[in-house]
Image: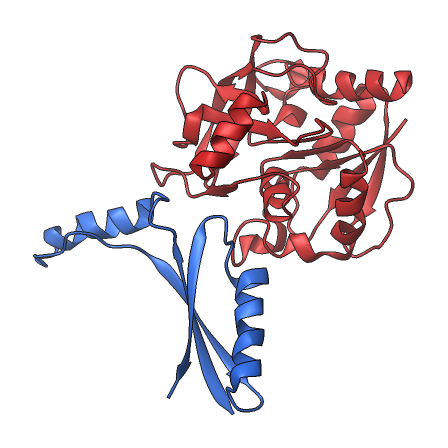
Length: 224
Length: 81
């Protein structure tokens, strides 16, 4: 199975993302922001970083990249897409996910290990977790406070589309402690924490809880 | 040649911690009588032609598409002059 990893100018986590996918047994296929080409991949990972220097708003410029004009219709058609951190911000700016990510309530950039509860274990990227399972992943962001209007929040809650919630303490003032959400179909998932940084004990991450994301997508693609 | 200004500011219901930090700093600097501050962005769009209705409509489209994220921000378009 082939999973694309997108690199924009300013993307930082693409190598970690590719490595995490390879460790799970997938082939990581580099995708370039300026290409109109998804290279026939079975799923796409939008990693974190500061694409286009976060100019204007995080993810606002990336949304209009040539690759995104291919990715948006493919995601609507069911292609599994995971966005972490800046990838989540891009998915919101591209309207593949509702709401937006704005400046942390405390104004500080937060970099720490964060407890997260998996509230939806039915998406393409979370099926190897159990509902209610608590995991620990690194967070590192200055603009990760999830906001949406009251109607959208109520819809997300009623449709069980809040996939991850911060547990213990909320690092950014995100509404309803939301750390990650999914679209209606469950193929597009975005979250602020970084599963790709928590796949190997050696690299000093809090553990290997991130592996579940990649094993989930690999089993989904194998069984497809 | 005309200049069109687009002001973008967070919607009233969206918390603006930067504005709050500025509001908290003002009394420390000796400025009194300020009850709230909201921080926004100002874009100065230089048009090649006149700021007629069609051009203004085009700038509004730019604002909706790129300059503002209407999920969280409001914008106002006006001609400077």
